Length: 290
Image 1: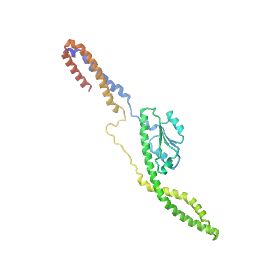
Image 2: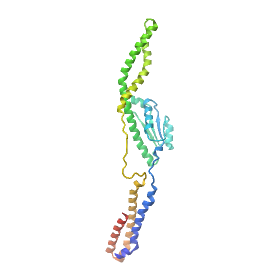
Image 3: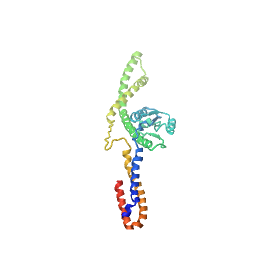
Image 4: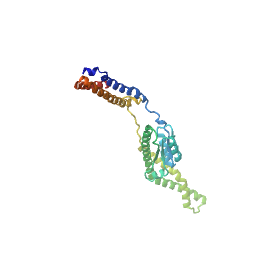
């Protein structure tokens, strides 16, 4: 066994394994610096092809909700697709024509997305997370709009009836005075009153319905409690992988050198003594690397 440990190649395996493990830690790991913080600079485009009341609210709501610096609203889908193709935009949220009509009719509206996956893994993952967030935001907004619409349907007939009665009473009185007691065309007067009253009542109905639906539009703020390291550095996340990788590669090369040394020394120091020395060297190597 003394011949085994006196052989320089027996210790060379430990030295090489340690060197490779440390090289991974001190040479490869420093390449991973700060965590990416520029994802907010990704250009996002909201393409509103509907341009109606609800779709405009959805578009403006997304613009206020999404945490991106470069977020624009457009109506040109082909131009937006070209921007995504040449990587001048990261993702497009498309509100198609008929979106407002589907919501009013109680149908499930369609929301489209345009992405280009020929980008970095980080940008692709951000796009997927953004799609999920947009869907959640739009669903919350549509729930609010559905409540407003439901209350508006309930309020509109009653408010319209009251306003028409008051308007007809005043209009007929004025018409009777103007005609000096002659018969008046009530149907024509009714049409005139309805044309004057309806826009005002619609605004009042929507305002009242929105006020009634407001208590149900509750959103919760979120906070994150970060435990462990608070360093914005990828090295803390990548270190376990590189340490394990360096140890694995170092032990693999050390095993090759140790076996080659064993095959040559066993004829000098004896097969079983040399084999025992090989096992002891393996245990020492494991402790040194650990």
